[in-house]
Image (tube, rainbow, N blue to C red; front, side, top):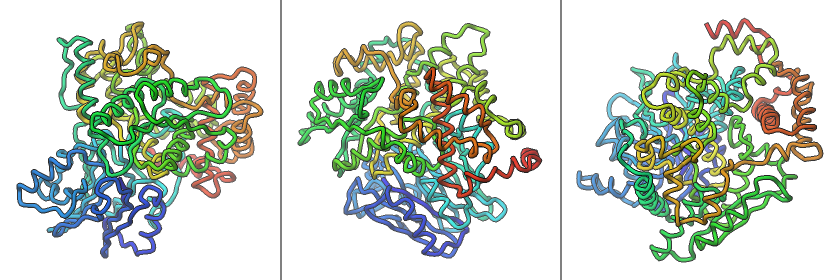
Length: 622
């Protein structure tokens, strides 16, 4: 696991490259390496997980140079195949096969990889060209800045590091606030910074002097033409899924560094925990599996520590109960915002950051989690509501409103006239094809929803958050449910094996978990793994004081986009009648303002330029 960065057709001196690397030191504290020439550079910060004594990056083979972030789980099979073709490898590190793999398969090399990764290749054999590739689920993000007229490319694994390049200015996308409130973080390749994009999942980008930047999408694992198996019973689906997950969890335990598991107390992480503990026992692992759960000082709703402890006892793990004091949250917010690089409206960001810091402090470098099961197996209430909606209803718009940090009606009431005008001029906040997928793509309603979840929401909102907040503490997160084989299997499930309104969600997954985790966990009501922000955002609580300060009328008036009187009304309503919708709206607005303060020095006192000169937005939109 690493952090990578680089340039094409850009002259960067050593000081600039060192500055970019230093901004990601937390994600690769074990070693640093860089290769740079007059007009290109590739750099790497390493978190050594596989073959700590080998794996020095950048990798070189002839006129090919490669840097890599992630883990390649089928590297042994690929090494054997490439050795048969005459290649020789000095070490057993997973990434050392990449130059030979590129020489063998060219731009299609990523199609051979099973794992989580972002890769950059510099090919100097004839006309200089750079190739970038991301994994099928988007587990390892890659942000880039492309100057089309000059043909210059800069990229990095994290947004603050990309902004460390001299040629990349931190300029706010003024309508990004609407995109953020619409989907809790920008979807697709969009970020909150003007001119900065993120490479989509399952993408291969090629940049050259002749052709500029070209990005090709590969089929994601769920897009490979698989059809539901109508003849398979729910019991058979559960048995097959259990066997598949057992194999994948066992594979993901292989590391030359200590491995732990995050156990929230819900189905997904509990199943991963049970399978990991069983695999370690079967393999004769010494010391057993260590598990981690997070809770909060005091008494709060939705406390899951008892369930997590029960899973740990049943699985025979060495359990660590992490407890954080809500009084520390205001101080943590700055660290979280900085590491994310852009707002993410899920309050769980504070918990996630704190949990992985505790995992690191306990001496671990790798953690298994249960992330992504809801997207694959039909675990969200919004999916059930959409499936159950009667024919003729506008179920697609209702579903999209459930993705929002602030529902559409409330969102529009918050905007100033000037900002509402700018938003309309800029066009839809969501990628254009989302509504097309929901309304007219082949497949059932649930299959179309799953396609949107996996292509757009999962990588943007979920996986980037997990990546940035775990690597902030030098922790590599491994995600069994994102393994291509598991994603492909989920695509073969019928709708009734995922969810049936009135009968339950994630039915195949519950079937797979039977007998492995306690009945009390299987039978408990489903609840999201998140911070109880409705209870914590209340008068007298630390978060309330922070929100009132950050969302002061003077600050909002200077920003020019949000009506101060409407925000005051939200505070009044939350104080008298606390509710999830209002508390999330206040949390989201607060997080956005804290992000502006972190990345834009004049954020608190200067309105965005587009709002001071509204015609500029119209010109850009045109």
